[in-house]
Image (cartoon, rainbow over all chains, first blue to last red; front, side):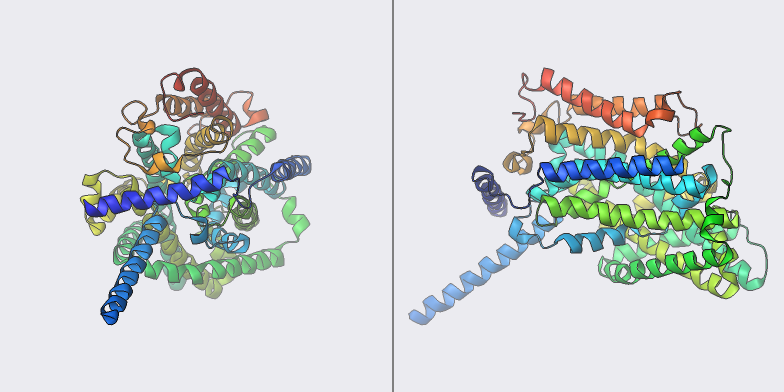
Length: 55
Length: 487
């Protein structure tokens, strides 16, 4: 029982840390529009390029 | 008095230290989110880790299967197209949230399917996939041993004979024994097997190019194209590779939670998993087409001659056992995470053995599965592509990339992810729709397809349909019922 309470406290502590980061917009290394655009461009170039080459 | 206080202070600090380390270990097992300071993998560490996961003997098998449908030129194109789309969509649905919150994948899944729904998805996606791969890899081990003994005795191999079955059964039992002993030995084998497989691939590529030039290879025909329509064969080859890309869905989220942030959780998959798997598959494809057989345990002996052939087969047998131990261990650790108290009460060795019963049955009673293993792979894509679509719709479009760590880890029975008896009917209905769309557009068992399959494949519409249904029905019905903490 005591262990369970301690564990719930630990979960609460970890959740609070994430809530603080979220509120302060302090997430590091987040994916931005550049990442998503780069990912879409890479996928498009590979799909179209190899489709034209291989089909 | 001061001494007593100092001693008491030290003891308290020691207890605190022990508690912190126990909490961190529990978080690493997935019981709690890992904090940013506890996550150690940067870009290259994660790239190396997922390359090691992707470089495995199954890459040879998938490459060989592609060679059945199309020649090497179309095959290379199909491998690149299928894998990049499959890997990017899978990574998008699982890794940004893991990199942001350090959350265990199936705990996060409570927000999409409910706390019991996530268990159901675990059984469908992880257990079935792992059991199938265990059987296929064990048969590949058995065929390697059968090929080895035949090569040593100068006889013809019998890939479906009793020797193969006995060796495959032995492989599963030895894997069970190794994993029952604990994970230390598995980690050691990983460090040896992955780099050695890269060397084996390079040697094989070199030997193939000694037989034929690259331009000759590119001009060769497919081994056994099922249809006269080359475009249809090409799209089926793409579909097999989409399935290979989507088949990482059950695994990469839980690796990505060990990375420092979203970017390091996402991009290494494009370098590691996509790059490494594509390389292995291309070697398997070129070898299969050049030597006229899609089975790596046969083309390896043909290409390398008896001495290098024996070494290669021994190594493949060993590498298969390592892959089997990896997937068995990961699945059972996960099963204990999502399992009920009665499942967690079963001893480690017993639950491992119970898990091996179906793969043992497949090896003994259905050895033909090996030759049609790509059919099994493509069936898994009907599920994984829909899961990817639901994951993207839920995390990016419905939740605006925000998860509630507190309620996801709190006791679930009365929490917001209870939905309907622990199941989110919307998420599960969307999964069924995605699965249905897939099978309607392309039947993996018979390879029959609708005309539209030639233009959009089956995985892509399945992913889109599941994501759209999940999005629309959640917007219409979930918020009013107070389900799932949607904003």
